[in-house]
Length: 382
Ligand code: GLA
View 1 (tube, rainbow, N blue to C red):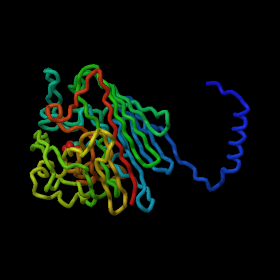
View 2 (view 1 turned 45 degrees about the vertical axis):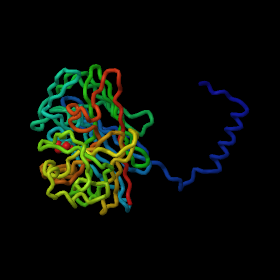
View 3 (view 1 turned 180 degrees about the vertical axis):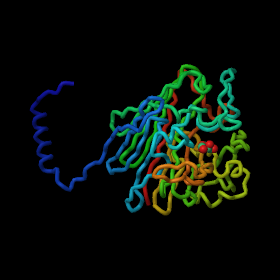
View 4 (view 1 turned 60 degrees about the vertical axis):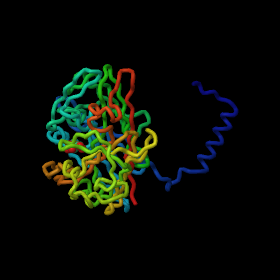
């Protein structure tokens, strides 16, 4: 568009100049710390991996790398304004490549379990690697958490877009799948994750983020004092291999009911078959919702630091995993050995094993459709 000089425009400019002159800038005016930096986080298979650091106007930060689209750090203030990293992870790329329980990663093509690594679409059977006996977990041996995504800053400058094209047949899944995951870090300390994908053949998809949170100290101590609220009255009970039985059961009277905020540790040792199967909490909650709009799935609060996190999602479920398989052998950031239950995950998702459960919401994506879903992790202190 061409800018035309007109008397009205000149009068407008004069008025604006006057306003600018009258209002400042003054020395006390707060300056935004908003920034987006890209740096080198190392290389794997001869490919360099960039680290994007997003800083919002108050100085709170998120670090995301191209390997696995991993959120490597998330620094937010406690109730006294002390900034601390609230996610578990490593200092180096080599450590992520060597051994990670999906710290911070995008999990896919199918997050969570598919029974015996088998499913059918339109009568055609597909077989996936069994990497979590006897099931397929989190997209297989080399899932989306272990591939290199191509990162680009978003046009608005407050986010990063990660793109990955998964070949037809990769890890046994049909169809070439083009995925885009956009991370946006807002001035309200919200990490918004928008997932999008298209396929050239019918396939199944279930993408999530596998961050382990510890709002107190980033993983130096257990999360058992964290108070959890999950906005769900129902869940999908599992068998001994963590595959849903197909039932959508009430949480009434169970130690898995978190409709009222309760310390995670309060009932985790209860004698309940489902807690036994999960070795703690490792269950999919069927979220209470009226429609598929972004709505509150869970709130976690750490009474020590005052930090809180709301999880909002468009997904029908959330897997609450209380870090039951952490056992101290992952030595993470700053040399901290992550002990049993030192981090918790809230993985927004479709229900586990949906490809084999006709009564669960469908996870089939067809060539004429676009997969599109959003989740927000919002941080604050009280
Ligand atoms: C998910 C699963 C857990 C476990 C972790 C990774 O949350 O549900 O059982 O496999 O991932 O260790």
